[in-house]
Image 1 (cartoon, rainbow, N blue to C red):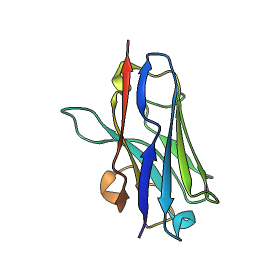
Image 2 (cartoon, helix red, strand yellow; image 1 turned 30 degrees about the vertical axis):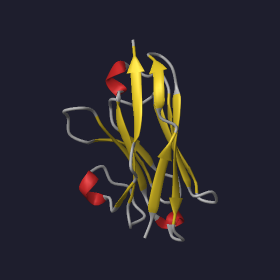
Image 3 (tube, helix red, strand yellow; image 1 turned 90 degrees about the horizontal axis):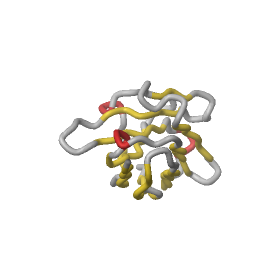
Image 4 (cartoon, rainbow, N blue to C red; image 1 turned 60 degrees about the vertical axis):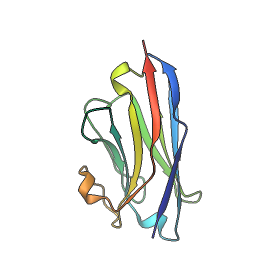
Length: 124
């Protein structure tokens, strides 16, 4: 069992930056692939980025590529999402997710554990 808690959301002006953190509990964190998803009002949850168990593989949605960076520290049971050059269309609730498996995935159905979400609002 893995429990996830996100933090770091907030209100930021377009062009600014935010750093989201996801802290996991559970002894097997280092074996879990992790991901970030987001959901804007009235829209479906969408994939943002994923990282494999070791941190050696990452993948990004085209909409955030070059602006967002995912990383992990298995010793601290944390996954971080650094978001730069934020745009109003990045406004959403951001969710951290964990897979039981080691390898990354881009579909929400492939993730087994979810955090409660943290709000990110970007104003112009």
